[in-house]
Length: 369
Image (cartoon, rainbow, N blue to C red):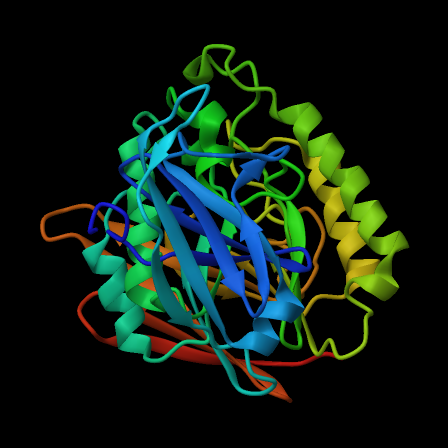
């Protein structure tokens, strides 16, 4: 049954749920058991069998309590209008480890650009993790659906289906014939690639900057409409603030994160100096209301920490410490470096590690609140 369990499932944290997603190369029906409840990959009561990636949504609190789930696959022989033929259900039980309440360890990978082994080695150099952050451009582009398997291979090898993953889209993910189908292969909330999440005592918000140049740039050939997409996120951010008691101000939250592939607090040089009004508004809303501990980014292919007092860099409005935590050199051999985090009660430890198994450097961020 390797065609159904080529990779372990990925458990994505989205809103107040986990989205358990798993690639299957042959037609099958997919459901998940958590305790005495069953969650189906279904569309308005119709079990899905044609999906390349199967997805079920499970309340996070239920899976955190159960600490295990069972993946159930029923292979399809032939789906017909009447008397479809299927095989017996195949089950596999996975342990699940909820994010602990203190000294939480996470690893951040962005800009892997379809490389798998090097980001995994960099993460392994950091050591054991409680959750994984995949923050955009994990694949080079969305021209071929097989590229999405890189996402699931990284998740499988670093979490084993037993720990949560936070997933954010990058600008390269918007490119290619399957970019419009990206949400079929990755987690979303109500079809959106921006959302909040809660794992343990950590609350976070994902904001998706979309492409990195204006919509009418020749590179895109009129295939993007990111300006209105960003405007919708401004409204989303205001809704989060209006409902803060159920979000970042809810009981037990100790850490507040902003995750974005692109560090929108920084104004890049032309032609990347886009959406200054919108990005400044996002920065203001977050700074004045959410007051995050750290902003976690990639995109720039560097390893750096930028502090709020660095106004020359924070040109769209200082917010909080911004960590750019991914660096790649595509020469042979490929070099990759990512960023480990340890969320403590009084500080956040930053650990940059690379595909050579080395610790590049460390830094400590004191908690402002």
